[in-house]
Image (cartoon, rainbow, N blue to C red; front, side):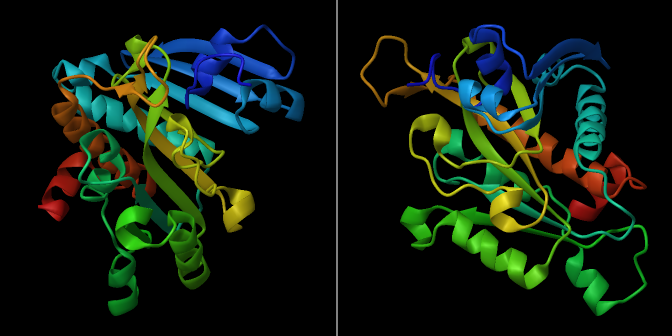
Length: 274
């Protein structure tokens, strides 16, 4: 049994567990945002925290939610830098960006909504070779859900990886948290990949480097949490979930763009995505 409430956030698992070897954790403030870093170093710690070995960043984004001046651009710059830190890419390396979740259910729509702000460029390189040196080849897709497509997300992603042979996969999904102060206020980045549905007890096949054969970064927003004292399977989400999903989806898409195309700016992406 998990020794703490169900959560997809490594920082919550680490703070709720007893101190142990094999886990490094620290917290600092950068560009006005609080950043918590958890690194799980060995298999023993991984089993105790129920999280894969790897690095996890959790960024608290209150200034974005308050719509402070320059908060969006500062947050996007920070997230893009941390993504590049988790997995540096050489010039010209290709990427596949996957949005997981159900667009029709707002708390689960972060993944597909984020894909609306991801700049897809692979087709440009194929149609006009050498004409876009500032853009790396990027493909993006909203994978849908099993109930709509009849296809597991992992099956679809595996087929795309085999066909496209990207150098990196980035997966975006909604998460579950255990602490209300993190609900719809944070973003988690990790180099461990993701198991869709794990936070709400509906585990699907994992999307990880071991499963796909290429490095996998995961970006997630906790949009639901268990309702304390309620029957199993009952989750809560804040009443402003529509605006949070809209804001965070765009932020994630633009952050991924900045990480993959570092010579371009937010204003460039505004123009290219309009």
